[in-house]
Amino acid sequence: MGLSKKTTPAGTRPNRNAPRAPRLAPGVAARLAATTALMAVLVDHRPLDSAVDATDGPFETLDPRERGLARAILGIALRRRGQIDDALGRFLDKALPRKSGPLPAILHVAAAQILFMDVPDHAAVSIAVETAEADRDARHFKGLVNAVLRRLTEQRDAILASQDEVRLNVPDWLYERWVKDYGAETTQAIAAAHLLEPSLDLSVKSDPEGWAEKLGGIVLPTGSVRLIAHGPIDALPGFAEGQWWVQDAAAALPAKLLGKVEGLDVADLCAAPGGKTAQLAAAGAKVMAVDINEGRLQRVRENLSRLKLQIGTIAADVETWQPNRLFDAILLDAPCSATGTIRRHPDVAVLKRPADIKALANLQASLLARATSMLVSGGTLVYCTCSLEKAEGEDQVALALASLPLVLEPIRPEEVGGVEAICRDGFLRTLPSDLPNAEPRLSGLDGFFAARFRRL
Ligand SMILES: C[S@@+](CC[C@H](N)C(=O)[O-])C[C@H]1O[C@@H](n2cnc3c(N)ncnc32)[C@H](O)[C@@H]1O
Image 1 (cartoon, helix red, strand yellow):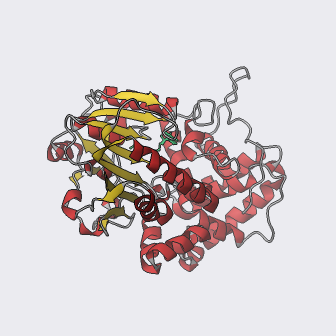
Image 2 (image 1 turned 60 degrees about the horizontal axis):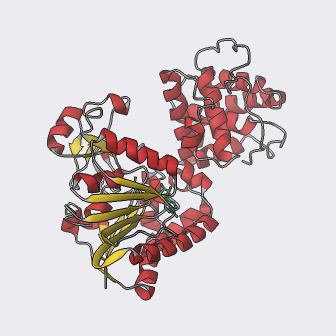
Image 3 (image 1 turned 90 degrees about the vertical axis):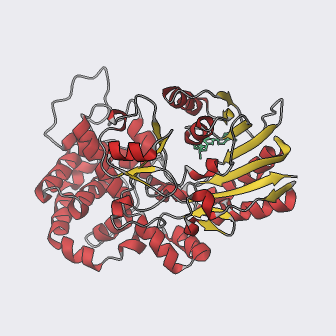
């Protein structure tokens, strides 16, 4: 379903000079905020986090319960976008008119609730009609909103039973790429894993068993602590004391591949927000964290300060940065398409295009060459990306070995908790379908790639 650009539903943007809007009925503000944020993602192609976190955005004025509801709706609207499109399409004879404001987002937000959430149907429908009414373009279509959504409530079970949820929710171009790279069966497993809410993974400074017990989680074979249920993260025991940080269990593996780093000069290239920087610093390395984005680097400083870990930071473009010395070891966590993080960021599947992968692969090759030039001879370089695309992983290694003074140092399963499945051909290659657990909410990993080199 195409979305036309423009309107923000009335009353969602806090304008500090405007008279205070009348208090909205319970639940309406959350749906308005979800509608506006969905428009930002689908029409303006903004990452969901930036739409949600914008200080002048619609989430700013929500109370914590409304905020939680809006986030839950958005997560489902994006994670199940293909199914929602398919379901709505059954009741729409033609494409929605261009000048209908946020109408498509209003329908998606309501359909997410009707199809997948434990929300009374009448509330989802009537709030959608009210949201349409509040917008000067969408209001002409409130009859359509009412009719389409009512039919959806009536036919929900039959529609869901007829859908292939695993296939429908992945854009065709990504599905085809994954089939080419991994085969049909693994692609289905990846797509199925994307439908599950991911767990919360923590990297702890020490005593994983103790923290797992305190927080009600489990310790994974790779050493991360995994939790299902949690309230606000900063209210969990150990957060304020800087005993742990949030980091997907797969994201915690590349830094470990540098081995013993105590006392070594280590460059963490492309470091923000600093999960891997924290690991290296906690392991006793003298870390220089480099990132092109000063704002994001500030987050590294704040995170490391909470963790009481010392590091150096430099805001610089790795493509042009000239350090005044060589490093003993380097971690290059290169910018990438992030298709390995779709479980946590379902907007990635909506926002990325094939051309992005091509452009990023070129950048990665250039950053790998720059990183190699900053390394002492005999030094170790770990290259990683949170991408499922081989163009950003295995293909980069082939290129680097052909053009740079590097040899491959194969990664062994015992270095990654003995999990054989994630060690493929001497590389680390994790998939969202890896690390299955009988409790689905404790399953899965972000899709990561890492390779280790030694400089000749
Ligand atoms: C995948 S994230 C890094 C995640 C981080 N290593 C961690 O573990 O928390 C990629 C980072 O690369 C940075 N970046 C992108 N292009 C860069 C460049 N040319 N030079 C330096 N940093 C860059 C981005 O600002 C972003 O923070």
